[in-house]
Length: 488
Image 1: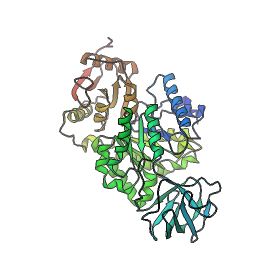
Image 2: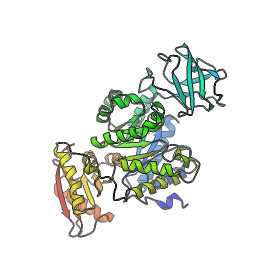
Image 3: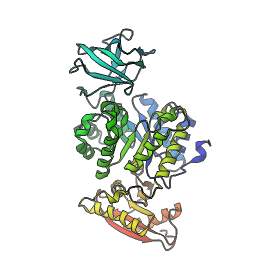
Image 4: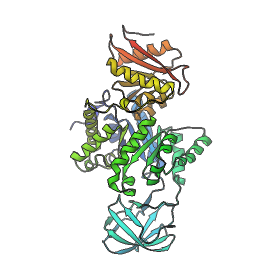
C-alpha cells in the first residue's frame, strides 16, 4: 500500500460521516502521527486512562503544529476521560484462571497479587451478594460471587476461564456501584483539557443527566467552556437517555462496556435507539468499539465488520471511532483508509435514508430555516449549502436534516471550526470576520470559487443569523447565483 502521506485527504470533498482515531504506541511517533493525520481523519482521541499529562501535552502540540504547517483547520482533539473504570492491578504475569476454581477478588491493598486478583478503582463491594456476576476483559472471563468476605474482599468461582492480564476492565453486571462518575483523576484531566483548549471531552460511564454538573462546576470556576460527549456504557443511562441527550453536547455509543453490561443481543437495537434520539435533537453521535477490530492484526477487515461500519452510516451516525485499531494495531493507517472507503461507498447509495424525510423540525425559526435549506438544495439540485456561524449552531442545525448538499460552515473562529469537524456533512472553513450580509455573501462566494467547490453559473444556498454573532438566531436563507468571480 502507498504511504499515507501520498494519500492526503482523498475523500475530504465527499465523505460526510466523520472518522476519529485513537493515538497510541502504534501511531504516536513523529512519523507515525504525521502519517495518521495525513490520512484525512477528522478527529484524534486521547485515551486518558493510558498515559500521563506530559505525554498528552506533547501529542496535542504536535497535532497543532502539523495543521499549522499545512494551513488547515486540522483535526479536532477529543480528550476521553478514564472515568471510574475498575481494572485488574498492574501485575506482570497476569492470572491463568481455570473454569471451576475459586479465587479471591479484592480492592487494591486487600489481597496480594500472588494470592488473588487485586482491582484498581474508587469502589467497595457494598451491595454485592453471593450469586452476583462479574465479567473481565470485555466479557471474555466470567466470575460468580460465592462469598462476600468484607467490603473490600470477595470470593468468586470462575464460570468462564482464561488468561486475565493486568489493566483489563472489570464489570459488575446489573449492579450499580456507589462510585462517582467524575473521579479525582478525571477532574484533573478535565482541567488539563480546558487549559490545553482541546475541542471535545468525553465523560465516561454517564448514568444520568446530572452527571454533567461536576464538569459544569469546573468550567464555571475556570471561566472556560468545552463541549462534552456523554459516553453511554451503563444500563442506567438508557433510563435517562432523553435528558442526557438534552444536557450534553453529544453522545457516544461505547459498545465495549455497554455490550458487557446489557445482554449482547440487545446492543444493535440500543445503538439504533441512541442514534435516533441524538439525530432528533441535532446532537452529534459517535459509534465506538470493535468497528474494524480484526485490523489490529490483519491488513483487511471481515465482511461482518464492513457491514457493521456500513450500518452505522445508514443509521445516521455522525462519526465512527477507531480505538485499538489505530492505538496498538499493526495497520493503523490502512485501517483509517479502509474505513474511509467503506463510508464513501455507502454514501454513494441513492437509497440511503435522507434524514429530512423522517425528522420533523421543531417550531422555531432556526429549525425551519435549516430544514428549508436542505429541502431547497435537494429540490433544485444545489450541491453546496453555506452556513455563516459564530458558534456552530447554524451548521449543526442544517446537518440535523442530512441534506444531500455539502455543508460548508464558515466562521471567523478556529476553535468553532475544529469543533464542527465531528458534525455530519460539515466542512468547516475559517474566514475573516464579517459584519454585514454583503460581506458574508462575498466571502462565501470567494472561498467556494477558490476551493473549486462551485463555478461561475452555479448556485449555492447561504444560511445565517441576523444580527450577526447572536447564538441560535438563524433566520436568513438566500439562494445565490454565481455570475462572476466576486472579490471585495
